[in-house]
Image (cartoon, rainbow over all chains, first blue to last red; front, side):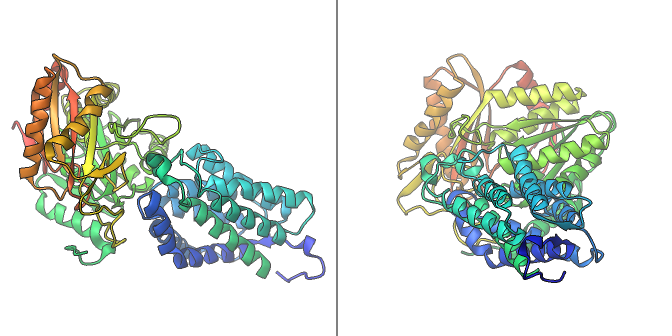
Length: 222
Length: 333
């Protein structure tokens, strides 16, 4: 894809971006593995970084074998099936379903403009809600996903570029993840802790932020 | 932290390989995907029973694979649910044409992965029923939590449902018996020390030398409250109170009393616990008709124990007494 500096609104994202995004995800998850484990140890069972890292390393191996010229949807479907079969815990089915629904939402498209990118993010979030049944405020990854989707929709309505749209989504996810700290958890293992979960950030909201930040950064380079 | 391991990455693989070598008379093992099935699986015409979950709770679940109990166990990484693929493969491997029951402890990850596997099995034409175990009274069961956890009561469900399947009950009947046991068993545990997940290398929580955690889960999840260490009898009383009032268990009930070690507590202490628990039940006029004492649902090297009480009737006593031939439970043949 050739960068289009003069007309950012026209920027779109193709399969090469999708692959770059996922490779970046694998990199940042590996980089933050210990940090995610530490967050999870405080209110869960301490293996979120471990499990996500195992999953994304497996994804990278599969990407190496993916034919060039694959669409974003094909890349995301591969990510989905690999995460479901390698991550385990709650994160495997949740992130796996997110990528699967995202893949379905953009299937057939060679490039993604703002509307398709919003559809991708919305489908991912809806997939997680469908499986995990969490709402905003339950101290889960949804507390990062839903603000991200809302910010992406606002950005699309404002006519901003897809790069800006993803940056706003990542910023909103980061704010949402931070906002899980004062919450009591209503889903997952952290819910067993009651008020003792207060003061700790949800690890799934944090990893969601890392994945969306990776999307924005690779889009800016695309 | 000292551990008898080679590489944290190989803990589950190497343990399962050792289990296979030690118990080849009872089980067969698939290494990729990883699951354990009874040696004669699938048993034609019998309901298959599959359980599983994170490793680190041994002998649960692999130690319960064999005639009269589980047809398959699916071990995940330590304290991490297995993924749907091996659950599906195990389900296929034990399907004798009468359907398969999934016994799932109530943790978000276990439930999501088993649900996904059940969907896939259904697509393959295998009838699957599931029972979710949630016997831990330490957790408030409400809309605002993930619900009560499945802990040591799971062992009793697996034994009794296994006996129902072995005598030829159909899938709906085996699922009914499993649900019945789950509805009549209550458990609560205590930790004296935390445990160390091999790949984490550090304790999942910290307890001062003189502190204990009441209401602990089986993954080192913190429990209900943290208190100063007390004599064994006082700790037993703290666990029995919520257990007895929850069902409730009342005078005249016949029960199975199960004292379960968390892995790092010696048998001598478990029997001190059993002694006090038996005293308290006698004071309440509750008849201890069956017993189980030992390390069955562990949490790696955690020091601590849990008490489970199951209300019995003639059907459950018959099924409990039925023959079982597994690595960890064996009687009656």
